[in-house]
Image (cartoon, rainbow, N blue to C red; front, side, top):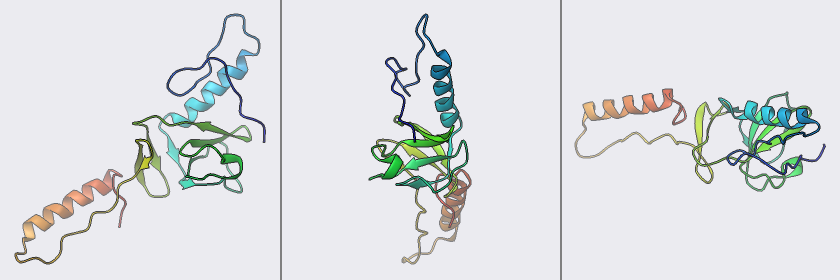
Length: 152
């Protein structure tokens, strides 16, 4: 694997490389910026893991799990995108959302990648309120349809 490119001047949010007047090899900077944009625009990830998969398709993205190893070492919580035969890493910022294909739900970055969990349906109790339980069930179904909590 080739080394990650380091750019002297980058954009403040996602470290997109910036061009300089009279700069040589502008295509390297522009292509790197486009690759990062491609990974972030309407981002979907295949899941979360601590090491790269054995094989990856061009454009495939993953969330890098804690204690990452191999080519992903030192990139915990980043989005790893396989492009041009190499892994490109994008450090997330608070509020970034991605769609996780492995769970069918949105993930939100707020210092770590958050995901919803399936609420427990109320059972038992002194008074059984069928209408309240039906309303709670409809809310859970709506949250599942929106990808906020996983399906059962």
